[in-house]
Figure 1: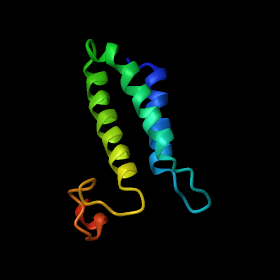
Figure 2: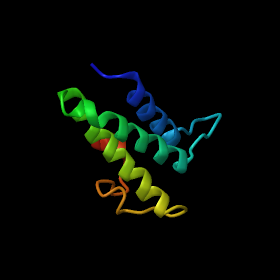
Figure 3: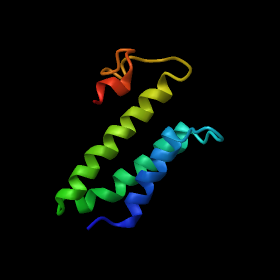
Length: 95
């Protein structure tokens, strides 16, 4: 069973990493990285006992790396951060 503590940190990290919409933009990579780091720290003990927590740990670390890469390349598009994106219509690739 997932604990709300690290799940909340994980969701907060996603909001700060991807939180742009039609009427607002809350993207803040520093806050995103901090939230993902807290999530990774707090999920570690449960990941030793739970398969669900192990999967979440992998997802947390993926998004943490993505946020760190995006921050290190701020202001530019970096293919190193998004190696699977080739500039084509992403929705077509997901079909």
